[in-house]
Image (cartoon, rainbow, N blue to C red; front, side, top):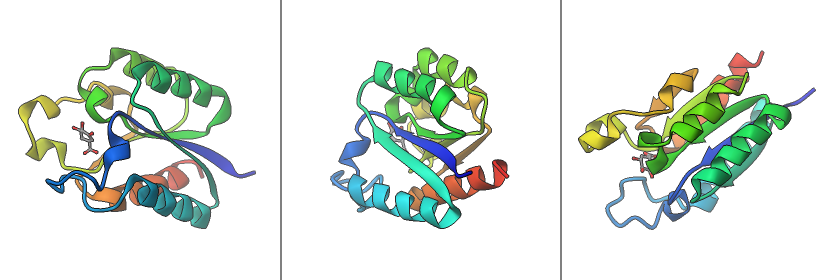
Length: 145
Ligand code: DHK
């Protein structure tokens, strides 16, 4: 049976490609989503790719994943550095969790160096842009075998 992965994106991810500093590369969010959907398909995974600017919505989706997903890839974006509710929801999920960041968060401002959600993550990928997102899906595919 095919495995389902929730790929959850946090606040402002919808603006990728529009950032004139180029922090997150030039690909639009829609293009990133498309690349992830294609890669997931090649791995035989069903991908549910979502984005919200709202913490509670992300918590609801993580809780939904308990019943509807085999694994989670999450880029909680700015909520990575503050959200105990997202950490607690992830800790209640039983499958593999990959924390993914487009940028290398440890090369950036000190407030981005501590993730609240890493405690719940099986693994962390950062600094590889959309390549890291594909690697996150490949990792999940291996972990679910
Ligand atoms: C994305 C964001 O929106 C930032 O708030 C994080 C993360 C980093 C990323 O690299 O994907 O600090």
